[in-house]
Image (cartoon, rainbow, N blue to C red; front, side):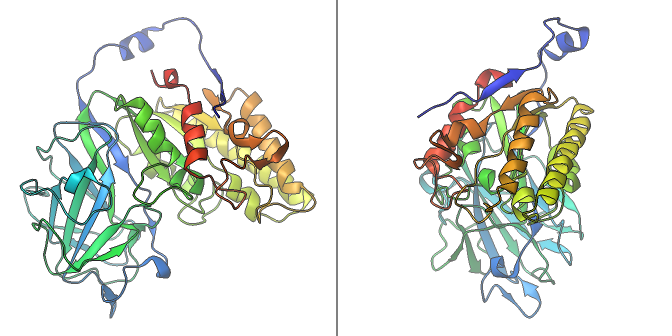
Length: 411
């Protein structure tokens, strides 16, 4: 089932000098082709024993991770984040390689594909607390939609149990004792379905990027582990590398306040404005603000008004950087724990969606609510799209969202 969700794109019909200049051919510059929103790692998402203990994390240990790039390029560079670390992040050695058979989540790499990564000409880097480090450019070509293996070794380990990660990777990483950054296989490695430290991959490209800021519905709760079938993944498949799709979502995230990770207003500079080559933003977030607020008429009216005010803030800040903003309507949550007997939260959702659809504040509107709601029970998701909890989607539902996005939006 496919439904049209695009409501409109603001246009004047007049080609201004600035727009005409923007349409001229451009030289390649660094472009974010993959990213994961950094956040403080919760205790149950820490690397398992023996890789966490005695106040040290990953001491004398190798971490191998795979990520899927969305736009290609002849070279690449990596971003490692210590945004939430309680101590220096000591990267002793880092390599990149092609995963065995091109698969996500595998611990083995293709023989002969391993390349050493450097940082300002050095093979190691100490990332200060709260900081980010970008690697040197490396001649390592990647194609759109392919997986990349990044392996890091920490000899000393990070001397704090406050570390930076992206728990909702939906991709398997692997841990093993000792330095195996140059190894083809990691026999006996411990699997864990989280990303740690790695926060971005960049390539030189003339393409542009669309950043998606969202919560678990964009982070992929209900998608297939190692399947790369979140809706941004499936949108990237449709775009075929012509546009990079940068997923900056986290389960439990909120717009107005911190949830799991900083709220949208707190992380906008880092997760949107500091990314390379961004031309568009899709804002698809707010359901956790509504669902975690008190289920009273007064509280929900306040949340709806505050969300609308926050959306205006995002629009102002993005437009100041010439980034076009697409607003996505919030999905139904009937049957989920967010649903309330009085219907106050549903009223708030409807008020927010009405504003998204009619305010003309956004450059475009993606009516995701209309795509996956059940026409017979509009407060609920279509059964074919529902993962089973009344809030999150399954891969079919995510495909419906991805297919509803008009590609002409990203010309």
